[in-house]
Amino acid sequence: MYAVYTKNLVKKYDDYMVLKGVDLRIKEGEFYALMGPNGSGKSTLAAIITSVKHPTEGEVKVFGENPKLMRNIIGYLPQESFLSPFLTGMENLMYFIRLSGYSRHDAKRVAGKLIERVGLSEHADRRVSEYSGGMKRILEIATLLLPNIKLLILDEPTAGLDPSVRKKFFSILQEIQEENEATIMMITHVGADAEVASRVGLMDDGRIIAEGSPEELKELSSLSEVLDIETSIKNERILRILNRFSTKGDTLETERGYRVYCSDSESIVPEIVRVLNDAGCKITRIEAKKPTLEDVFFKLTGKPLRGDTNASNISQF
Ligand SMILES: Nc1ncnc2c1ncn2[C@@H]1O[C@H](COP(=O)(O)OP(=O)(O)O)[C@@H](O)[C@H]1O
Ligand SMILES: [Mg+2]
Image (tube, rainbow, N blue to C red; front, side):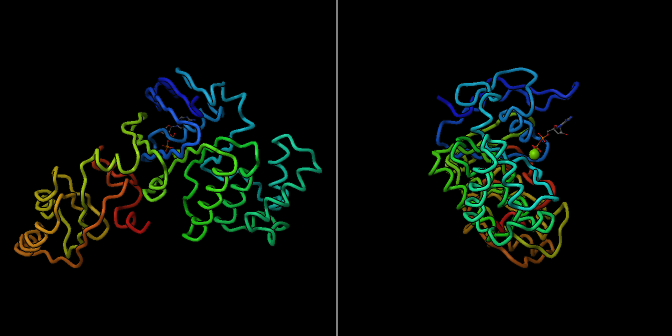
């Protein structure tokens, strides 16, 4: 049985088709990551799987049932924070635990345990309006630590988290996966997040265009290396020159230079240095790297995964 099963899922807003026939199958116990640019329909898909939204056409099942009937076992972290800033951490947690059917008395006991488990005991009685972004995310994930949760749907959960909170987030996630034998579907823009998934789906313009383990996707895109080059000048001419060295003529512009997709950097670096020098362009830094899943996405679609940022930021993760 699949934890998540969708068949030909279509979602339209008036005439605008957001999902164009999505067949998503996630097996029990899998850690599935969904990557795609802004507006590709990821959050809409997550909202349909959790029964928050309804599809225009197609079928959706969670553990073989209508997702509406499975709300108690679905832990959903939407893209926007869902905590009340007026309530304390403890009160917020109790509220969500009570929604899962616990009595007031039990909810208090369980909330106390969970808040301790995620390391926020000291802040339990402070209002959430005083929490940092990272603390809010950790409190939100505490709401998913209930034993009944079997499917986690996480919509860009690591956005804006600093590295230490991100690490903590992943370790709590792993605990939930192991203790509850939970299935995870995580939406992310960050290649490094998807790298830990057992399977990754790439979504573009309302469709899942490729799926596989991180290794399989890298193989599929036939990417073996990327070369990050920082240059003294950036213009169309330099881009055209570098395109000659990219395997399929697709060089990505980055903040301080370019990212060239190549198969053997060692043999082409001296040539690149020479040709750019002849064009009056100095190389301030050059580095060969392993491709990330964000590179794979760019290679397969011709679009950068993060329109709002750039490749030189990508490599920080
Ligand atoms: N309630 C809505 N009404 C109209 N359009 C919407 C609504 N919700 C989302 N959309 C549109 O659907 C597209 C996909 O949105 P979304 O699923 O949030 O994408 P993603 O999460 O991949 O960024 C966007 O173009 C967005 O503007
Ligand atoms: Mg979204």
